[in-house]
Every structure is written in C-alpha cells, then in structure tokens.
Length: 102
Image 1 (cartoon, one colour):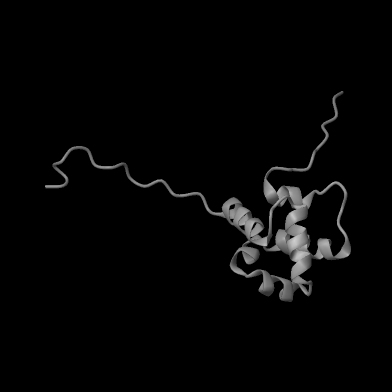
Image 2 (tube, rainbow, N blue to C red):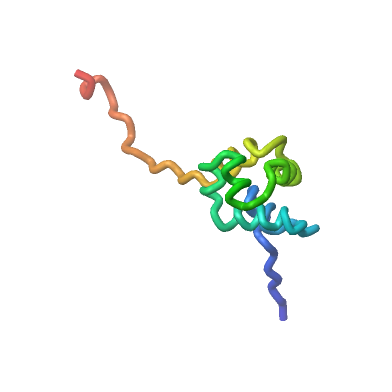
C-alpha cells in the first residue's frame, strides 16, 4: 500500500512566507501573519501605514522584506501585488479586415 504525503505549497512569495522552514521571530511572525491574512492590504498601504497597523517598526518591515529575498519593502509589495492580481479576462478577438473600420 502506498501512502500519499502532502507537502506544503511553496510556489510564489505568499507560499514562501507561509512555510519558512526556520520559522520567524515574534515580530517577523506578526508581519508574516498580516501578509498572509490580507495580502491585498499590504499592496494598498505605505510601509509606514503597514508598520503602524501591525505595531512594528519600519525597520522591522524592511528587514522582513530582505529576509523574504527582496531589496526592500516596496519590492515585496510589488511582488505580492503581481502575485495576487486577478487574471485578465479574455476579450473578443480583433475584427478581421478593414470593413469594420469603414
């Protein structure tokens, strides 16, 4: 009998934040939880707003972004925004020929 073992989904930045093998310090855990619980929230806030809402220093927010592999908080926000952006809905195909233009 074969047993199936489930592994955590590690794709994308949110997966990497969720399943960090070494764990997090208390402050890092606060930041990680906030991002996982509301990834859209971090994309709408400045670093100062996010830090104040989470009661952490802006330095902690920058250190967390670097821990996640980014050069700073802005790059972390942009990566999360790209990852969570809705897929574009395909539109109708472009019209054929010039008859539609005239």
